[in-house]
Image 1 (cartoon, helix red, strand yellow):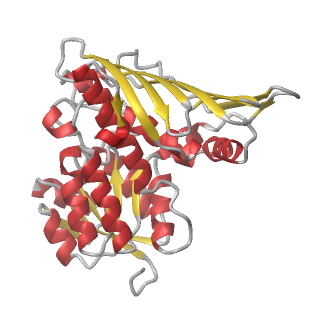
Image 2: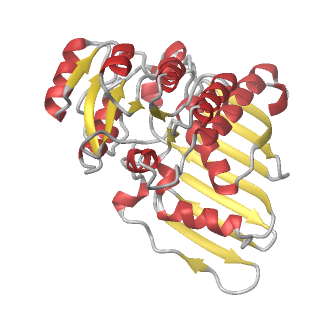
Length: 356
């Protein structure tokens, strides 16, 4: 689908910090796309963003953008509490949707969005930049082609120093990857009614999707414990996940690290080989049980977290030029882990996904 210029016409819903840092620059740098409209709940901000980034139209109501802006697709980068409502409205009105993570608040909501997109033959892409690194695709190929044998165990340590955001001490993001054009509103990260929760929604949403992206299998059962560190949100998360192929996953994740320390270690143990990745550092090594190890080239700095890759893939997928590399089903897999983990932490029991 494209307009008369041959370009995909896009509206951005929830144009704030991350949209102006990653998605909007990715759109305006893409010769196959046109930034048609932007929406922010504050009209003055919407006008400012439209002016500064060259959008034709500005809105404070996402419904008016969808209904009147003459667009093919939307990028939704609003706060998580709005994701389901805005994505559902957009899909039901025939728009392709790129949706920020976490996809929704619940599994049921994520399932409904996937069903609507499928019914109307629309692209639904969940924005997970780590699905677009060279190492991610090489690792997935090794696993899918059987080079590791049967995957038996996966160990993950995932950290990102955003604890002050989750605790409401800071409102300025400390992501460190982009300059801050516009600050998030108070509560965007630390109010559970807006953000869903802390580390489990903000960061484990990445890991949950990445697991199914790599392995092609779904989570089956989750046991979890959270530590809130005297805040409203989980800051330290420990999860034991069993996948539907029998693989065991241990996941430790926290937001409380120094700003210069980030870890995203993924260690995959198969019956023929093991695979070690350090995503924040761009490292990957393959260790076969027989033969020599293979160390893959370290990724360049701009290839470690390709923040504009999701919108680039989204544009090409909508135009029929590429396969959607981060479909809604991966966001749904993440939501299964997130919802089950929250229930497990509250109940002290292991939660089977089929019982959600």
